Length: 145
Ligand SMILES: Cc1cc2nc3c(=O)[nH]c(=O)nc-3n(C[C@H](O)[C@H](O)[C@H](O)COP(=O)(O)O)c2cc1C
Image 1: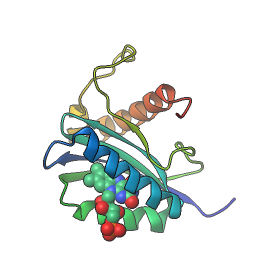
Image 2: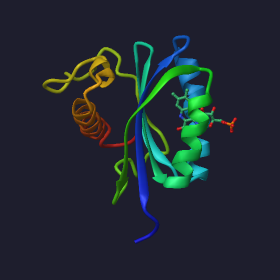
Image 3: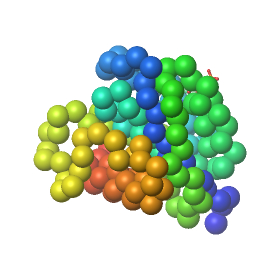
Image 4: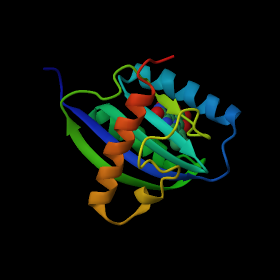
């Protein structure tokens, strides 16, 4: 196997709401840079809140997290989970993205349209929510555009 992989999941709050144009610019920038650094992951945005998973070599993940923490476009960055993983969950995504607008397809059973439960102080609840969102995202984007 190659070097160990790390995954970090966090939530944050946009300082100003992101419209489509700002999100597109952020994603274009992120995808280019992530490709260069062997990073993959996914980003969700809903009602001024971000949820992101970053995965790749630990050094690259940590270096990017340090930049992201300093990014003035958002605040209240809160890491929910940092873990070693055996394989990538978002292999095909330099940064997969879902706006979670009004769902085009019915939301899965039990899925909420905010990340409020990710804000909970209960670590187990946060970890469960990260897992659920991961499964949800992968199911929803099974065929990358
Ligand atoms: C919610 C959010 C998610 C971000 N995700 C990434 C990302 O996946 N990859 C990336 O390179 N930059 C991402 N950025 C941008 C970084 O914070 C930073 O602007 C970028 O790495 C450029 O840094 P530099 O100008 O020092 O090279 C994100 C920013 C925000 C606000």
